[in-house]
Length: 391
Ligand code: NI
Image (cartoon, rainbow, N blue to C red; front, side, top):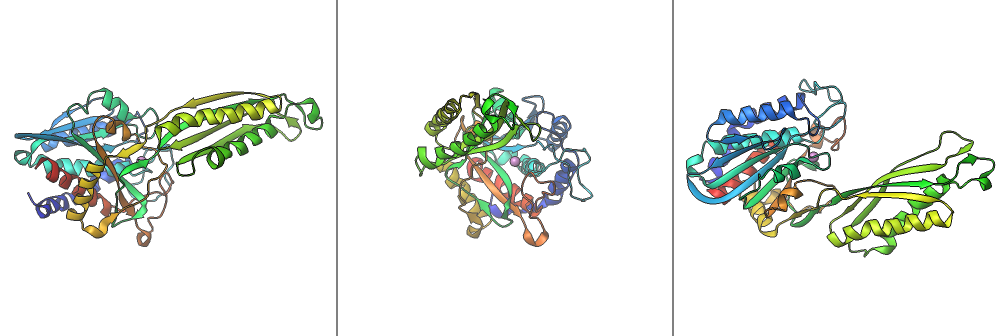
């Protein structure tokens, strides 16, 4: 099977893939509630024939294409969930589900993988080994759907796993490849500072939780700038600060919420200890007390060197060397990492922005969209990865 044959087959499903994407875009569903989406995917996969289709969890779908000869098992993953955002695009295929929108491109991920499944299911007799298609629920909300699917056994026997994200900050015409650490572990913290409330004109009779909380925020920034190795990657962001009711009352407490991002497991373990030391020191210094809660989220996405090399070859052979973008890692999070715990894997980005077409809005924006030409790129990447691994 040649690249040209597979690319032609991918082009033949192009219109169908766009139609699926638009259907899914009109009917977005929130994380863990992808009932109609999963049913649609399940029925569509069944219509292709040659696939063993199952439902590993309530709102996920798996399809197995078992070849006529033995060989390796290649898994491919798409996520299917949408976000609680009111769409501001005026497409004729805009969301029909008020307050819910496919604003991260997961509609595209699902339709690309359906396209690949359609192409490959017609080539069963050429497959040595197996291609396994994961249609995953709930990527956006911790603890995430990937971990649930792994618990359900979908990775049993898998030799390598790949997944893609349509990426609007990258222009159409590029595929982003990163070897090693690619996306961070996203962890979450909550801090409450307890002072003593009172009259704003008599601050000496209070313990001012706002003034102390502000120092906590400032001093947390010293962790990255002064405590950790400048060559290590760490982000500490306070993203919410709630306290007070009016201009003349010092509140008794303030609450903070935020995120910590890291790649390195040791640094990840260390971060909450460094943070609590700051919170404890600042609050004690001013006679206040505190509560500190910390939750570890998804593991970091660390791409396997071998699988990444293979995927880079797929880009070069399928699309051309000029398509390769050796992009920098970023501190976003992705539960694709759960699959990578079980087998070597590679997560890659498909450029889906297009300034000329006005496709410029960031992910999770009410006017987010993708260049639909990128869907064909995804199908080509998946089917040609199968060519290299199981054909
Ligand atoms: Ni996403």
